[in-house]
Image (cartoon, rainbow, N blue to C red; front, side, top):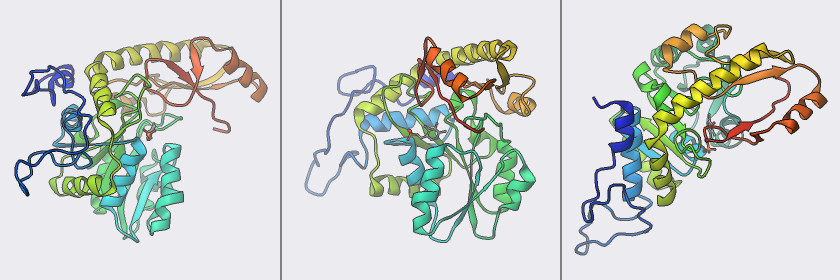
Length: 339
Ligand SMILES: *Cc1c(COP(=O)(O)O)cnc(C)c1O
């Protein structure tokens, strides 16, 4: 087996046949010639597939050591298409409470209108999570670490619970990237990424992915990818491919930087508490050590003082930009009240 960083650079990226280009070109094209009427080649129409996207999909699958990867126009497009293809009206989904806000909005404000039902439970309490299951539960959706409280959820234990109830385990692996965590190896069925974050890595694109091993589920997703049509353009695919080449080195640096910042904040007199899975004080530190190959680039903390002093703190930050998102080479900071 090739090392992660070698796979990241080479898989899905064999030199292109006609020209020998060492990286896949941006196939900015919508349709492909049929050699004779009714005789379709490998590529027909770019919503169905495009060579730049195919290169990215192979690369993403290789990073999770999976059979199949599918690229989408955003993380939300990946999630929407996964739900639309894998669930039916009246199905029930159990999800962890502190999901990414956009995911919760998709579930409660869009998917609910189509007859899907959702229950939320605290992900670190496995008994509570299992108690939320119903006979019609078909999916368990988790993220680990969660956003922004960085709770670490036991993926293998969740897989066991889901499978005992004949449900699929879907893991949003955006916060870790495949370099730091590979949920399919812990028995998850489907992995979701917002490639906007660490995989792209440079805050210059929006993209998403679904990665999995099961052939039947893959066929459903592939059909829905084309039928729903929320596909990424070739330039965005190319940018993600460029990002994944340096994922290993970027993630190593993200982890070491975050660890230093976590320790700095933990010592600071104006900080009430720091949440970072790499700190021994983190409630799931031991689980994180076993499940993750590093503790990630996200650090959360509770500042002391009132809202006004908190605003002052953010407005005085240098280098750290106040902005949503994560996983780029820039430093971003955000404030959430009441957590
Ligand atoms: C950003 C994010 C998403 C949504 O992805 P987009 O690319 O913004 O659509 C989903 N899950 C997590 C954990 C995220 O951070």
